[in-house]
Length: 316
Figure 1: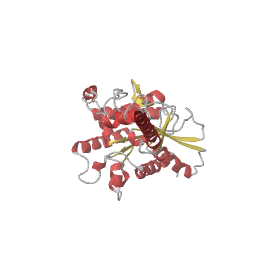
Figure 2 (figure 1 turned 180 degrees about the horizontal axis):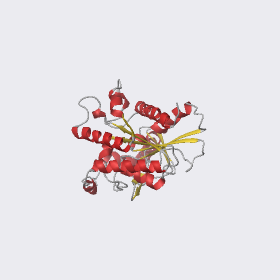
Figure 3 (figure 1 turned 90 degrees about the horizontal axis):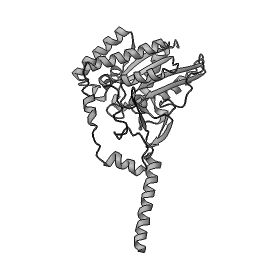
Figure 4 (figure 1 turned 45 degrees about the vertical axis):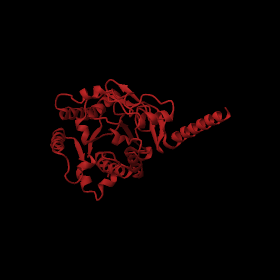
């Protein structure tokens, strides 16, 4: 009886230590949670803070990966809005201070721009968003009186399907509530085999010209931006496999050509990162994985955005 009690106490102690370690060292047990939305599809639940694998993540009252803001900024504030998917967001592998928006904020602040007493670069983003998600967000919330709206997409976004809330609460990457234990999250995320969401297959078979539909969403974002007296900047980053040889696949080459024609017709200020990265001496060192960027990559992107913003704001 005494031995059994000792074994139980040791087991309980082991699990307590493991639970504490998983929470304190890796942030398990406190993932970011999502909320479903009939128009946007999903967005990060507002007012969240967590730390994942040592990286600090903060979501404000408008589901941005930014500090809390005032809806309408003071007149002397330069406000830039970056909207995009996981590349703009930075994900769990990026500390709050290392996101593209945070890097750009500090860089603009260092310029001591005489016309502005404060710089804000807002980060509206969520994993796997594409132009239609981003359009729906802006239709709901507006552009927060930003002088410039920067739409940051990647090649895959041009083939993005209609917004859906199907993954929320069903895909382990889009939880809608906190797990009871860090151990429970590890079990669900890494041990249990994920169940496919069967309805997603039908969504991916969306009829029509998906690329044209996404172009239309970008066009509507441009129109909204213009109506709110803001300027619009479109940027597209490539997948890692597109850099160098053999380069983009045939369907991507055709879509890129269509995008160039579209931006010229719409008079959209457009920056394609593919030639910039092809000219970089070590572009692969800028990537975290096949699509996302690390700190060096985020620094590179923020520098390009800054170089594009200053002429738009008539700042030399």
